Image (tube, rainbow, N blue to C red):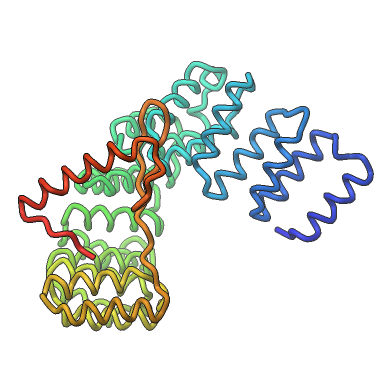
Amino acid sequence: MEDFNNGRAVHGFVIKTGYDSGVAVLNALIDVYGKCKCTKDALVIFEMMDEKDIFSWNSIISVHEQGGDHDCTLRLFDRMLGGGVLPDLVTITAVLPACSNLAALMHGREIHGYMIRSSLGKDGYREDVLVSNALMDMYAKCGSMRNAYLVFDTMRTKDVASWNIMIMGYGMHGYGNEALDMFLRMCEAQLNPDEVTFVGVLSACNHAGLLRQGREFLTQMETKYGVIPTIEHYTCVIDMVGRAGKLKEAYELVRTMPIEANPVVWRALLAACRLHGDADLAETAAQRVIELEPGHCGSYVLMSNIYGVAGRYEEVSEVRHTMRQQNVKKTPGCSWIELKDGVHTFITGDRVHPDAGLIYDELNSLTARLQEHGYVPHF
């Protein structure tokens, strides 16, 4: 029910009655606070526990992963191993998504190695489709498609999600033909593609520039495969057509598709206008985005860049003035890299990293070299 108030009331009752020393009760409380999105409260209970079992660790790790704190998920997993607690399949399925989201390939490989060496390997984790899918998804999102395929190839049972992960992975990294080949193999295996499958297929066509195939798949989705196109599918095709420079066709698809365009669709068209320098159509797209989502910074930034490239500096000033009036702030960029001693996160303008001085010296040197080759920074 995700009922925080009643959960806290029950917690108070547990303390009054003296049941707060029971491991099972505390594990349940961790789960309650986690599902109520109170990660800090869940962690407080976990840290005060005198005795922790595998369920305690699984609960707190799952709480942080579901809350999006992937760094802490991996730190807790390391603490669990350091404390001599052996993870089970539940632990693995909670930790692997953290590796996926952080692109922490080395951590993911270590977990895979543990799975092979431990009793999980003896019990045949390949029989567990959910675990194998999580492992495959980790490799795919970390860019190691060879390892993803090795996991896929050794799976004794594959479901639709297994095929979708491979199709999405190939498409994400620009292997359009491989993604389409995987789709054909899926159909030959007599598995019916679903909405997610076609998001992967159309994304693959988009990233690989397979314009003709992308158009055909959108047309055939309902007639041949019985899958009704959703806004995500139309967005993929609009982005694909726009990237190819066919802005009029993209705009016409936005206007005529049977679903009302959302801000994501208009932003895809706006990004295509920026790519090909069409300021007039960009104004139309930007106006629609701002009407639908006035607080989102992306459309303002794109329009400012378009005006800047076109030399329309008065409009650039107007966009920035509008942002200040609407109290719209540009979301700082964030990136990370995995090295031997862990995952390092970087935010735009952040100087808290211990090696910040060396990092910025190298960035300044790199920027200077880029500018020598004609690079102009955008707003």
